[in-house]
Image 1 (cartoon, rainbow, N blue to C red):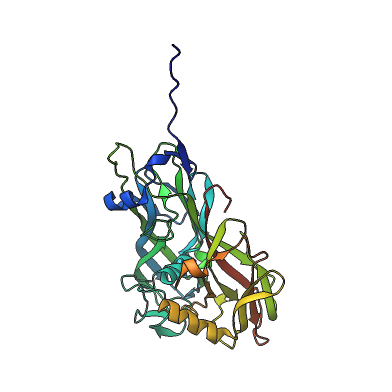
Image 2 (image 1 turned 120 degrees about the vertical axis):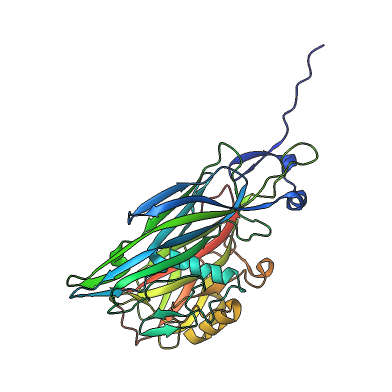
Length: 392
């Protein structure tokens, strides 16, 4: 009698990793898992242009807290030292996260990460957190946490000499949220490949000096992960949630600005991709500063698709700024000049935009005639969730 062939257990591929189909059981996973918070790495900041960090292959990763602690030494001498508006959050010029074959599913600057954190977590507020921006201290719209210390203000001329403590944090949202873990990364096999790449801004992007003035920054960065354990089910197999999607944050730059209506086609559209948010800033001038979102700088702001479909529009910058403050409990349109559209803050199930059915998705914004453009550029971020087999 011929031997009976053994049928292999059906496999399911999630984020490029083969997992037994029977192991995908979200209710059992959430009943049994345990959250872990641990320090993955501590690296010294040496002013180098880039650091690459491999993450430990264990559990399911939902997010990374990056915490910089250091000292800033300002020495004006007989000259001067000035901080630029990129200080302090764009100390991280670009944060890139690659997971299981998907290149740079997160590729965004430090300042945009801070804004996204406030957008996602409306209970996280910067109200009453004082920092110096420009000519004086401000207590609304700093994007700062109370535990942070900038050392010196942002966009301040004629800094006083001294040694200043600096403590800054950024959160990298690998998962879209830490409840359902949509977009979280599976780490628990030898074939898992997760890399965090940090591009540091040169000091000339953060400070200017004159004469014999100098500025120096030293410190270290802690990479603190939030992970969830992978439990074993009653059948002896691992139990995991549905990790069939990636969560992406991608930053782009558009420089062909003009007074009047600007229309920018959003990068990264495609079938099976859902747009959660699009937000950005217009940087302008020399030195470059973000334009405040108000009626002086902006006329109508909208998003559009197809030939002439315009589902949402605001008559001017002040209307946009007020709408964002209602959503986020933070004045992101003020000192930092953010504007954008949020499709996930109130009801993602209802409002999220399917980019496969909204062809030619565009951001529209009007720069008022009184805005003197000099080296102006729009920096915008698109936030998507999409099937793991698709390109970002």
